[in-house]
Length: 322
Image (tube, rainbow, N blue to C red; front, side):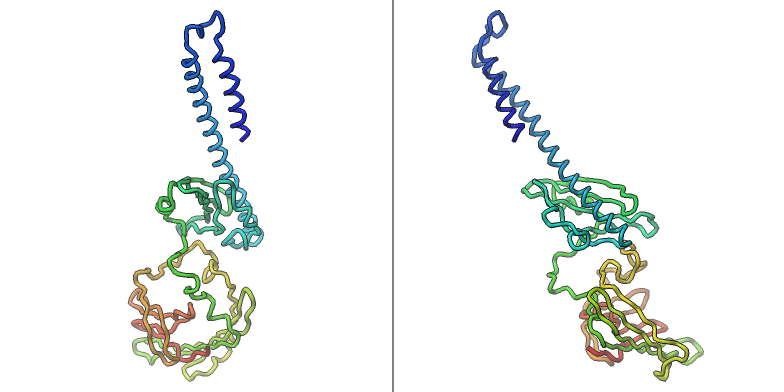
């Protein structure tokens, strides 16, 4: 605004000076219309230059905001040793602090999936334009060193295509339809039991039982025990129940490094839905096959193995208490 007011004042002054013929100068030979036309061209160039400066200032504001939010996320990481998944709930950022005049930064701190042997682990922040046709900004950064890269894209499709390592959430499934990844552990006293059979050539089948029980449920974690029984379903001598504490943290579930994908996880297109019956009852499951072994896991209770069949071993859920 100040720049525009200044430009108007300068324009008016220049028009007054240059539109008035000055004795003894080359201006005498030019008509008033010619002098005004020349001045308007110069003013237009100046306006374009000021507009460019204003646009660059707005982009700088976005970069400054992203840098500030990156720093707050890294501070939180240094305090807790875990990767914050969002800015508001995990890092204490206010919703109002996610925006500048032209852009709004998404609350999510995105995974940047790198190779398993990478020493650095990266994350990304994304700024969306408020106006249609605006550009998208992506700032990737290393959690430990702070190494940062900022790129701009003309569309969200271009953004995703240019960042295949950023793990975007699947928005095609409604939140209400997504199973709670920790549903299995959120009821104290819930029990389930597996029967395991291993076949070894020249020997009798090796049979064992594993009994699980949820013993404690808190707001952000649960505790369960696993007791190992022998082929006669009796506690194995000298083995106390093993206790495990599981935090309700999606990024850390099953791994101490959320950026490391499972070594050889099943391909998504190899997973199908199937309802099966086992001794414990009927379950809606996800079935996948890997290295000749078929596995069925509960759809309602992610992580609950319902059945497994391999060349030399098998496992079945034989008891389950809702």
